[in-house]
Image 1 (cartoon, helix red, strand yellow):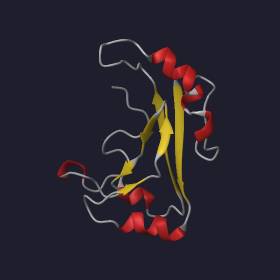
Image 2: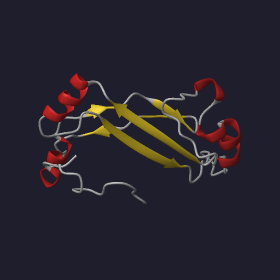
Image 3: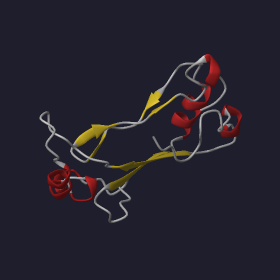
Image 4: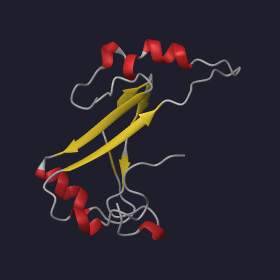
Length: 125
């Protein structure tokens, strides 16, 4: 699996202390879609969900599509001061989930643990 952005234990919790707003970006790349019988449905999904998003479920605030139908970018912008402060003050193993978004016909969300999700990741986002 390819990981882009911060690797595990790269973004220390202390690095977000002075941030007035936070943005988390997920870049999704569709590798393939297969039916239960192994039939490749990738082309069907890409045609149906132009650029990852069905035409009746487009969110211009979060969809920054590159024009490549097999990729989709979701940006979760948190600019409300109270929400940012809540994230900064969450205890270890506590999380916040993004709004649900649809890409490639599937529903997704981001889950962020601002102070870590395991002993190994304590103190890291």
